[in-house]
Image (cartoon, rainbow, N blue to C red; front, side, top):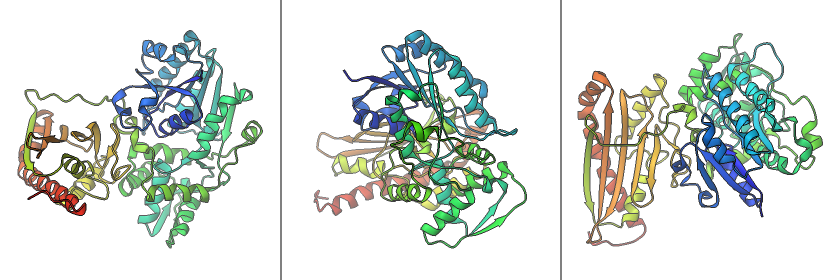
Length: 492
């Protein structure tokens, strides 16, 4: 029988790409996730066993490890200027303890690479201590340490891409010139899977990096050259990670809480200092930065992004579990309906493709302004876009929304992640009628928080009402256009 592997962090950037490659290699996979619904739209969902639980709860860990020999620990802590280090260490202790008591024989951990220095950023320190905690247990650990991962949808790639595309001048604090060794996501996956058949890697800390050693400033110039952009560097004598983080937050889709650990990491050199990876995995030849960049750019432009940095809820919401929506007293809702003489599939497609390059169809400029205001006050903004122009998954980001529930051909519910004084959702349904027509329903839900929440809703309701009214009409019009493009007559 095929060996069964446990993967934690399967909804994250690396875990979401590791799982299908493990399946392709012939392994059976069990995924430990906090919310099983977030896996429902992955193509490989039906090929894996799903265990719902949390690394902060030992009973669910024991159940997830039952019958497992090897487990991947791909969990990252809350990212931001003040990461909860104790939470990370508690999770690692729980995992190590459960591994000992469940008969797990090996842990494979993906950590961070940072050269020894007296001033290590809190996030890097947390990742380093997580590895130490795992190794203190009785189960042997293989730890891979990498500086920055580059691939379509990675935070580093989006940071380089948008910064280079939108700034003719790069104002470069000191952290722009620290030395690093970014590695392709393809090579990271090769190492993670290769470790399964490399017993000599057991108990080792293995530093991995790409074939290029360069600074962040050189990354920007390399991208600019590849895209034919003329860009200029202006050196600054200070570091300013907080100010830099906020600036990058404003001009890129990547949120401040994700950006800041990257910038803090770049204040420390992160170069591979030994050849252990080459000796243990001679078959892996890491790509250089330019090759990695070309592959990532090509996949992004062809909408072939498997996973994105924004897939991980922890990046923005911390431990907040997706809220189960109930229409209760105190919940304000606005529902609009239109009966369309159109096939249900086209109506569903017309609203499930909202956001990203398609935009919001009606008064798109107003949505963009709302995104800029949100960015200004520390929110996620509108420019996260969407991973794929047509496909959606539960749990992934869509502009400043999060896909909370999805039933293809029936329902799409988005939860707001922009700054609002309360909780908000936008829900669409396409319901087939007995006569073959489709009922399009658009519902905006708002749960106000305190007096400010009620004032927000009622003062802005005239604007919201106008936008929502125009939006449902545009969705209906788009469904009609889709039908016309397919040269189908519906007897309008």
